[in-house]
Image 1 (tube, rainbow, N blue to C red):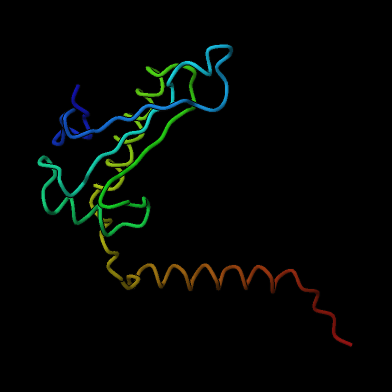
Image 2 (cartoon, rainbow, N blue to C red; image 1 turned 30 degrees about the vertical axis):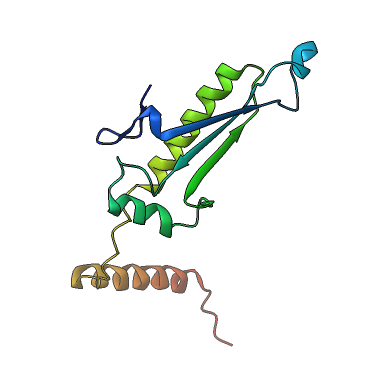
Length: 140
């Protein structure tokens, strides 16, 4: 089953490596017998579906720690291996989706228009006039 990241990118199942081990945590009496913990290993630099630009974008970001060029995700939240597998795949898809988002556009600095400057000054004058009218004008 291929992993869909976005509309343009889909990772084939043969590029994802699986490891299973015994989970710590909830599970009842069968906890010592089932391998319900799931680890996904996705090698970024050996992937044939990612472009060199994608690989570079993933490698320069600090949000996820690459171990020997691999993204490793371990899941042991659920009781069954199937649920943990689904959860691990969704986490990998969301992580890759976040890492491959285009960088935000740089903000171009602008100057306020003349009309906005004039409106600002007029509102300040109106407010000052209102405060001046509130004062008592008693001469001693």
